[in-house]
Image (cartoon, rainbow, N blue to C red; front, side, top):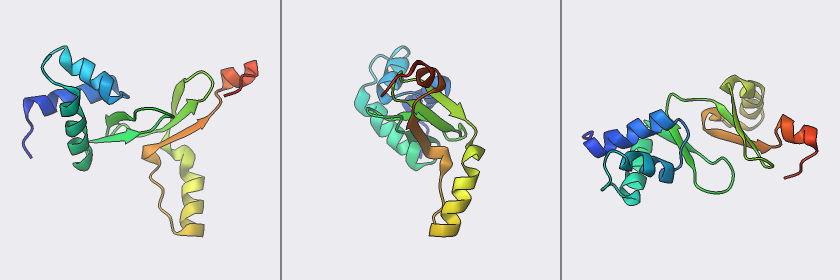
Length: 128
């Protein structure tokens, strides 16, 4: 596959934004090239993901967010305030081993978001 200028702009946007929806990526790319449309962004993201260059994660309801392949961690998404924290992948090691031992299932913890309530919201007694 050839790295076209548009594909490079999309990849650069994913890397710069770290976690971004296709719409956010489109806005970022359109600053440089206003003629790029959202359809091009979706097709390019799909291609880059098939090639293993980017990955998507669902951080709750709504559009997925995209990040560069080497940007690996587990996302903690708060239902109450919408805050998203990142923790190292190794926090999932015990679960990964348990799933493999009990179910023969290999977990890809680099493509994972956990939903719950953050410390601040829990302290305030907030509910999702």
